[in-house]
Image (cartoon, rainbow, N blue to C red; front, top):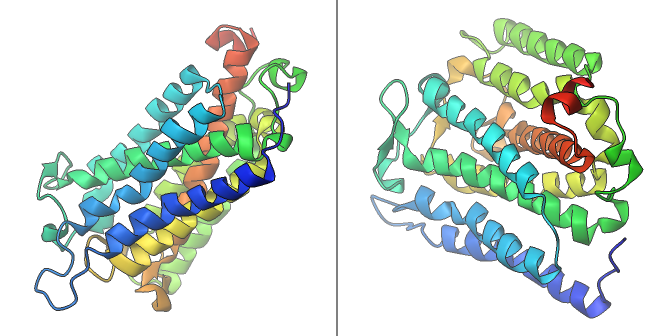
Length: 307
């Protein structure tokens, strides 16, 4: 049964709450900046995690319970369990090649395990809270704010399918094209090295698309996806362009980037403009596939392979 639309009064207060859950952590994070100091952002990276943590708390403990939204806990848990290791993998194996962290005083100073000497513990929290924020925001938009465009859990279009695992060749072609284009640009214009970071992002972000897009596409609330992308990219640009790069919380190794940097955005690599777009895309596909499986009542192997 379709949920009733929120009243104009409720909608007004919800808009203010949505603004507040972004503005408050942004203000707290910006307040860490000390203009005339040898340590201009003490624990700035640590505090900035509120940009994800506060929206997580507001959505999980206020928005969703208040509206009685029934979250598929199994689909939610499996999505995070599958995708967070991708971010952890990036840091553990590849941080030494892709990133460096010049401003130690912007963190707690605690090193988390990673090849090549470790990374700030904030890095792992960054990816965990990032995936949680993306997924919770999508769920709330899909189930309530943009529920008119959602496919209900008991809808025939969600329950009925032959199998979930369905190859999408266009995604493979797109992935190959993007990687080859990046390699060619790097070779001719981007300086020495290999676009390893971009290659990792393409492979990781498009893997769910390669395998599941045809069966995920009919049940995805694309309007909700677009709003999630807008909000997450807005947060990301505030985070990186205004704070992280200018104050040395993290930066990127030129030899592993394509070689295109946005000068007006503190030399932000082009890859970072799109990273959270791809994260949102992959997260939503995985979540909706898991929801289809759970809604069908079939065993996982049967749902995937159609046996």
